[in-house]
Amino acid sequence: MDARCCNDFSRSKLLRRAAAEAGRGLPSIEPGMPLPAGTGLTRQRFLLGSAGLALGLYGLNGLRPEAIEAGVARAAAGPANPVFVSIFLEGGADRLSALYPASDPLYRSLRPKLALDGAAGPVFAEDSRLHWHPGLVPLSRLHAQGKVSVLPAVGYTDADQSHFTSRHYWEVGATDAQLSTGWLGRYLDVAGAPDNPLQGLSLDGELSPTLATAHVPVAAIDAPASYSLDVQNVWGDVETRMLETIRELGVRLGGDDPARSLAGTVQVQAHRLHEQLEPFSGGNPPVPYPGGTFADQLSSLAALIGAGLPLRCVSLSAPGGYDTHSGQPAALADGLTQTATTLEAFQADLEARGVADRVIVHVWSEFGRRVEENGSSGTDHGAAGIGFVIGTRVKGQMIGQHLDLQNGIDDEGNLVATADFRGLYCAILEQWFDQDASAIIPGAGGFTRPQVIA
Image (cartoon, rainbow, N blue to C red; front, side, top):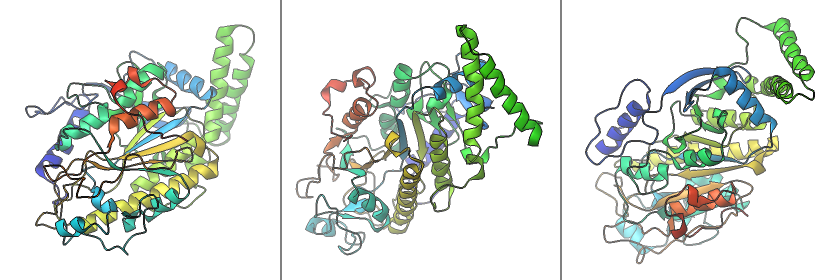
């Protein structure tokens, strides 16, 4: 564990990892600490033969393998759905470095060592008082193209500064420690399918609490590119002929009988999925990516979307550690640079594949950092933080506002939130998914919806 991290952060990671491992039981939870959404859901290993993906499936509700294969194929044969990608900056990313008020005298007074120079990063076009961190230059370029909406102070009232609890609130979409399903999981329970686990896909190798459902299946994989398309014990010309025969069988099964027609459609679609994923197995994206696991994950995700897999909600974590109690400058710069460079490549990849209008990305962190630096070249837990919504369909305008530090610091020395994450979730549900938020976000009627989608 990174030595810069506080005990709360380290304990949070360990507890969540233990809770996510099916069959291992739950760890000892400290008093008042909420259970992660999805705790107790059983994980079952499954190979989706039509797509060559090794999956961990949750919430199967008795579904048999053949039903899952059929469900995925059926969903892939339907209309293409909008895709939402949730990317987590783990540890509490420092907003006052990511988007810093270069000319604010209080900024330099409260951060004599950590304050960035005005010439370090480009000016934020929507508010010239702010500058982009040098590591976020790739996002500044996307912002200039109208493809990034920035939330300069997003959070919630009476912020809880525990990593575990605050993250839980963001994951379930409410300041409720008792909720056991994620906000995207509840969306899938309402709008998803009972037999398509790819509708909710975690790329971190374990169930993302954000995707935890009550009724429909979701899936987790480590890295899509690591799985082949081989049929077990069959290869070469024999495999090709076998798959072609499956396709022909599917065509012949069509006709007037609804059951036979459905079976035929599934067979044809399974063959089609295999063909679509053939280029994906080669790992040659249409644009260059930086190296690293995060880049591999997003490159693979772009290929899965381009291949026509029936994805709706995807969750993963960005690189870097943002719990920067000490040694913040180098750690923050490294994480932001890796993340922003990869996100720019991912956006270019989606555009090259012709699917960019179907995808938006939300980047979030559980809280921001305290305004005043500490004595270890770092910052401690704060309240309002930074967020981004990225895509060709986003409005590309600031959500909330930046308050100068004279007026924008609360009594505890933290940034005041000017946008509520629950209002953002409501807007995404209604404007992107065309789904009434009141069935998913508790108290949805009380939150102002920003304009997220153009």
